[in-house]
Length: 416
Image 1 (cartoon, rainbow, N blue to C red):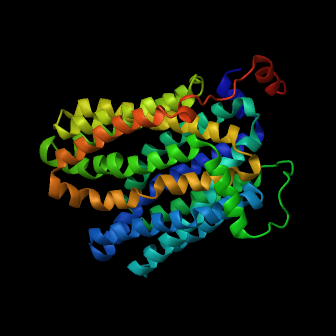
Image 2 (image 1 turned 90 degrees about the vertical axis):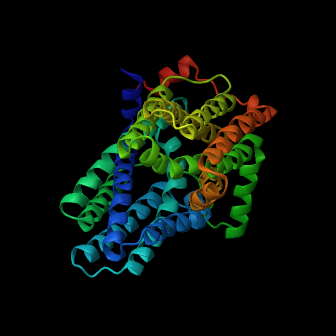
């Protein structure tokens, strides 16, 4: 039996895998539908930005609540509730648009509600994976999730664009709602043995504090979370904000940017596939070194290199992101106590995303002042220097994933 097939032979994980795959598909279908819905109503690019900001800011501000809830209640129930709420939200948006009664402020409010609902899903999902597979195959399970995410990205975007172009944004959002309903249905079929939880937690603030202590207990957890947050601000956001402009004006147009984005998607898929089998000896140092390679795409974009060259560099960056995510989630699931895992994941998600909206917002204005090439070079140099500093820290450099013993691996699949 192939390794990946062995992981999918676990019924509960198989249901979770397909639920998240369908959810990923809908997540990548929605942005183009929301963008064109807003443009049809107001014609304002600023309003499109506000709509996306409503989702992102609501999600970030609610993540800690989601982490506490996911550690207190059954995680399957939390995810199911999140999907059910998003089904209602997307169905309402779609119905308003299809019937011609939508107003832009209503879309803003519904976007914010959707972001808040999603904040409960991600921490619960991270915590649920170890409940559905043996620990010895956690990395393989996370790799399959990563593959699903990056296969769903181009498919969701393509289907969303086709529906919007042919029958309209409202119908695309109704389809998105249907993906949430399908995901909820699959999650409802998962059957897990009860896991001990605190029946009556002392109070919400204490749970947050306990989660924070678990988050800061290991240097590599909080240090890499802070580093990736600044990475999104200084390196990631400028590349994706300035890239389309440079492609349009200096590289030949939208086709050039499509080549670059496609390169990233291919690399991301490859990272998930490699994550099925390759287990780095020094986990955090290895993924840190991989991330330093993302400087190459910024440097090539800064000098207006050919699109194919930047696309090749984007492939490496996508690989680093995807493979790094597999190793990171596996490490958290191995090290953090199960009853605190969702809260630690919430702190990680919130920390990683904290500066991303600001990065998108200021990348253009900053580039107008110092120049696009300078902004991109700053991002490239920053990631190389800081990665070297971060992986020199002993707790990062010496961290190792728990070994998978042959006899443990075999026993995990006796039933298969």
